Length: 285
Figure (cartoon, rainbow, N blue to C red):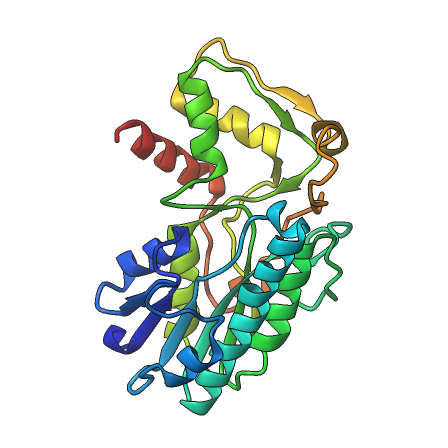
């Protein structure tokens, strides 16, 4: 694969950074260099020679999307922007690799399979579900669903590590269950799809391992970090958001089935192993 023909959109986010690390010769743009919500800007971009478009750009403020302004922004980026990229991919015979989320589901089934009908609970989820529909319009497309992304940037594990360093024993929800997806592992899975020329369509890619709650993940973080004497108090999502009436509804079950990606020959690593390495790296920074 000629990496110089790859384009990374949303290059400064957690996934964008991981993609840039894996494909250093790829072209990389952020919103200032290519505003995907601007139809004319996308149509006028120099697509010559581009064979693969990685769409790592997204509006990800789940609670913010519940506001009128946030809802509009989420739809513009997560749906409208994807539509523009899908059209460009179709017109220039490029493969669109679009990143989706388990938030397109209502979280009542486990594990979520690729063909489960979308039933989002939040405005963010609705915008991502709309984006999936748009991405599928590109003749050559991979829609990659992920859960609980952890990479180089603001994320849950880093937040818990900062609390632990301060000696804080947090209260964390124990009824949202899923698997962490480390950005490097996600990129490894995406690269696998391209390398083996897997059939186009929807694929779930997360780390493997036993699903856990956010509270359990926090305990694992504290254990790996060697934080002694700190405890994690369980709470429910309903209790945690009791004083946050404008918060978005979250799917309680976020575990994604990995059967389809594993059938292509990809073997995801256990999230506990990647977490231990991630925590060590963060503490050594």
